[in-house]
Amino acid sequence: MDERIGTICVQGGWRPGDGEPRQVPIYQNTTWKYDTSEHMGRLFDLEESGYFYTRLANPTNDAVAAKIAALEGGAAAMLTSSGQAANFFAVFNIAGAGDHVVASSAIYGGTYNLFAHTMARMGLECTFVDPHCTDEELAAAFRPNTKCVFGETIANPALSVLDIERFAAAAHDHGVPLIVDNTFPTPVLCRPIEWGADIVTHSTTKYMDGHGASVGGVIVDAGTFDWNAHADKFPGLTTPDESYHGVVYTERFGLEGAFITKATAQLMRDLGCIQAPQNAFLINLGLESLHLRMARHAANGRAVAEHLAAHPKVAWVRHPSLAGDSEYALAEKYLPEGSCGVVSFGVAGGRAAAETFMANLKLAQIATHVADARTCVLHPANATHRQMNDAELEAAGITSDLIRLSCGIEDAADLIADIDAALAAVE
Image (cartoon, rainbow, N blue to C red):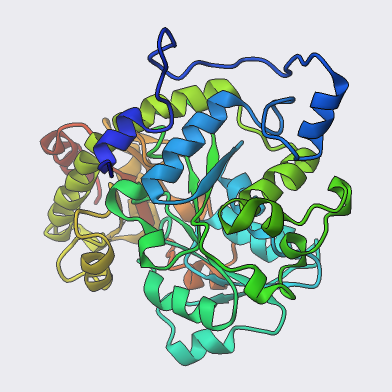
C-alpha cells in the first residue's frame, strides 16, 4: 500500500525480519569479510550488489537514504558528509570543467561560494538568475554547455520561494535536469519531485536531524530524467566508464539507478565525503518525529512573523506564509501546509539596532545554525554570507540589517515574549 508521510518517517527504510533489531542498527565497521576474492571482485566491478568498504556503502546509511528517498518520492538516494557535499556531488556528477550551470541567485551563501568561486576554479561556470526573473531572462541564461539548473525551494535566508514548475519546464526545454535543495520545507511540507524537479538535495543537519546533533547531507534522484535522450550532454552516464571496466551506468542500472550509482561509485570513491553510520543513526531518530516537528516549526514561524509585522520597532518582515508577503502566492501553491520556522526581518535602526536586539534575547541563542528544535538567531551578512560583497548580498536578497530567526518547537507565546523584551532594549 502507499504509505503516508508520517508512517514513512517512523518506519520507512528499515523493516526488521524475525529476531532482527527494531531500530536501524549501526554498522560501525569499515569492511566486510568474504570467502573468495572472486566474490569481492564482482562487488568492485559493480556486477553484484553488496558491501565491501563503508566509504562507498554501509547498511545503516542505505536504510536512512531509502527512507528519505521514500519521503521525497524518489527512486534512489545517497547520504553525504554534509549538505554542502550533497550539493557539490549533485552538480559535479553531471557537470565539470568546460561546463555551465544556471542557478538561482537566492541561495545559501556557502552554496553561492561553491558555485561562484570553488567550482569556477575547477573550470565550471555558473550564471545566477533572480528566482523571480521573467521567462525570457531565464531562457537567456542557458548555453549549449549548460548541464543543470539549481535552486532552493525556500532560499536561506532570503526566504524567496522557487517556482519549481517554471524552473523545471525551462530546464527540460533545454534538455537538462532541475536540482532543488529542499532543506527548509523538507518533504513533509513540499515534495519538489511532484512539481517537476529531477534531483533533490538536503542538508540533513537541519530539520531532518532537528536537534543539532549530527552533520550530514543527502541526494535523492527521482529516477525519471532521461539521460539517454540527451546522451551527448551526459557522457559520464551514457558512455563506458573505463574506471569500472567500461560499465555504462544507464544501461546497467537504468534511469532509476544510474545517477546515484555513478555518484557513489565515482565521486564517493574518489572524494570520500562519507556520512558516518553514527550520524546516519542520529538523523534517523530525527526523521521519526519530522512530521510532528515541522507542523510546530511552521506554526511558530507564522505566529512570530505575524507578531513582528505588527511591532513598531520592526522595519520589515519576510515569511512565505505571512499574508501580504511577496512570496505568499507561491507559498500557497507549493507550501499549503506551511513553509518553515525561519523568519527574516529587519529592526528599525539598521545594523546597530539588530546587534542590540540579538544581544538581549534570552531564549533565542546566537548560533551558526538554523532549523533546530531550539530557537536560534543569526546576522547572515556578518556570518554565513560574510564572504559575499554588497552586490552579491543584494542579488541574494540579503540586506545588512537582515536577522534570521529560526523558531524552534518551544511555546510560541514564550518566543514572542523573548522577542518583545529584546526589542524593548532597542532605542
